Amino acid sequence: MSEQAGRLEFDDLHLYFAAFEVRFDDSFLIWDRSGAIWSEILRRFPEFKLRHAEPNRVTFGTSRDDEMQVAVQVGLVNVSVVLPDKKLERLSRVATHMTEVAADQLEVARYSRVGLRTQFTLDFKQPEAAAAAILSTGLVKVPDGPHFGLDAAPAAVEYSIRTEDGKNGFSLWLKTDTVKIDLESPFGFGSFTNGVHETRHRAILDVDRFMMSPVLSSQLRVEDWIAQTLHIIKRDGQRLLGG
Amino acid sequence: MPATPPSKPNGATASDVFSIWSSGGLDTAGITRATELMQKQGVKSTASDIAQVQTTVPLKYIDTKDIYGSLDAASIELRTALTLLPEALRWIDSALESIGFGEPIHADDAMQHVQAIMPELFCCRRLGDGFGAIVNAVQSSLENLHGEPLLAAQIRMIRAALERVFGEPVITFDAAMDQVDKLESAGLIVDPKDMESIEELLDD
Image (cartoon, rainbow over all chains, first blue to last red; front, side, top):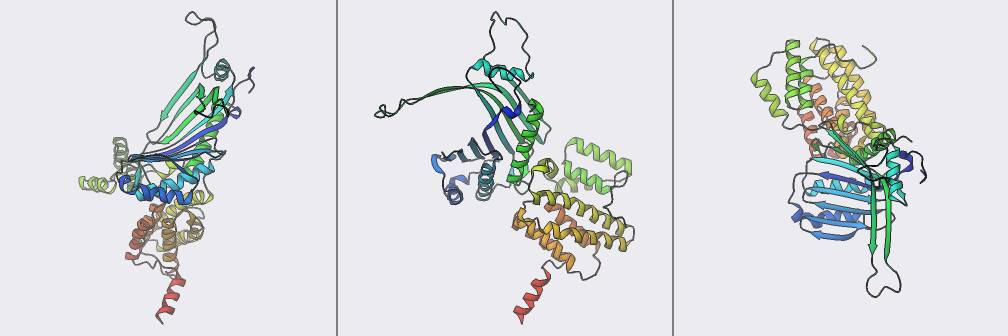
């Protein structure tokens, strides 16, 4: 979709972020077995580097092309990735292994919630252009004319919906977002770089699809669940926005 | 014998009522629905029946069909397993029904259909060691009959094993072995035929 006009369609967006998460009743075995958990995970994925460690939460991450962060907490396992591959194959592999290891080591037999969150984005130079893109979908209506004494184009728009049937559910946000990065160069490095100063305005379709009924670990094949959930998100995202 | 699995008869039977209870859990709506069906079908229940159901269904877990609602995107082995297992269960129900009507030949015929499904299910063992163990045990149980018909109790045990693996496709190996033990306790021989020959050789 160009800045000028047109209707924002699903195919205009690209998959920017995805996260898989399982939640379970607090397992304090994490205080005994954290080392075993991470040794097992690192044997399969040696590229992970320690980012953060405290008793209730340990985080590892990578900064390859697809930046990934993985965490095991007292009551959850989370795998998040920025700019993932289109089919979430790597996330799927990591999530499958981490969930298996955590369920085994933390003796988790059932999950209270399983979710996959995806963000599809499109960047714009101006916030008004991002807002216009959201408005072009027709999901949000803004009456013509001045609003509350202002005669200007909206700079931010948000549409959200949440649906649950007692077993599965989803939350969806179609919104604008502005990301401002101001990273100063460390002392002594000023002659090499001026740091990073960038502002991005984005239209985002953010979908969180989840199971809210308890699910046994023996019922859930993580790689299949992720594949079919991504399929549902893409299929219904296209239905929502067209494209 | 029909060439396709039998469809459910009109109206509900006692086992349908139990299925509703089991799959829907013990929420008020499920009990009301089940009670209505029971009254409609003239199924008599007692307080002890209900108590038994309550102890056998301790928690309401999500159904397999609600976890994997869009199998198009699932792996071929999961898609195949979740398609074939309900078919096998329908044939088993047909066999049990035939036994109830005093028609052992029809029952045996239905179980032949189950046996024909098993090799394809065996190809889905990449789902996990537990899945493979149960499917292998059921397949061996059927092969090791050497033409003898199954007893109703043995058919019910095979049904329980396949229903378990349908509900829990990634069942752990240890949990699967419990299920395999139950098959053995029903008098079924769960080891592959070739395995017996190897054991005999080793004994010699």
